[in-house]
Length: 269
Image 1 (cartoon, rainbow, N blue to C red):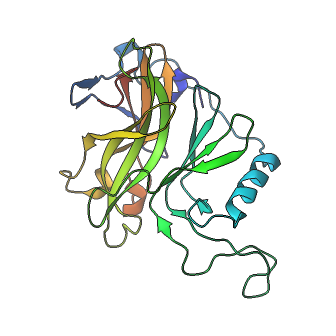
Image 2 (cartoon, rainbow, N blue to C red):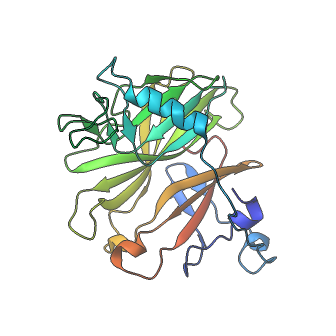
């Protein structure tokens, strides 16, 4: 994650990062002050030079996903995000997720891979708890975030642990959610509809509620609708929330990047 000055000015393709002022219930997401806006100090470019797979983590997910002792837990998912909890556990969040049984190799065409049959259940989101020593232990009852209505679903994105309210000693987990609605091409992954924030209690990770913080259904052009939660970062008394639109889905040259901020402890209000 780039530092705050650089993160506030990141651009996606030709899209200019726009600082928004959003009123979400009683929470004011205020635009950054003048001295932090575009036109200040130059950004320093960062380039990814190398990467490597984490063999231990990959092996742990393979062990847990391929375990056939249960048929109601996680066996694979996409849209992966994670957040470390105060007690050292890690909460892993996924979008579309397969449950059910995984069969050992060979697969039906003779390849040496584990496989699922067509009866494997698919849910729109899930969460898996990893112990502080790195062992996957529990799949929370799925879907963790129920569908808001027919033809609509919720995909979890970034998550943070924050005070229940500013200054509170009690902590909760806030999970940003992208709500999408079934649509026609090019919206094969759903029409962007709104950004929501779910609150999970600690330490039991019980869903307490879901609040809509930015409804975009009134924006006529779906490619101009902005969803927040690509990532978040805390800096001082603020939580910065990054997001973007789906311009590329509508064949625009690039999607636009956005960032907003909210006082720590008010992400879910």
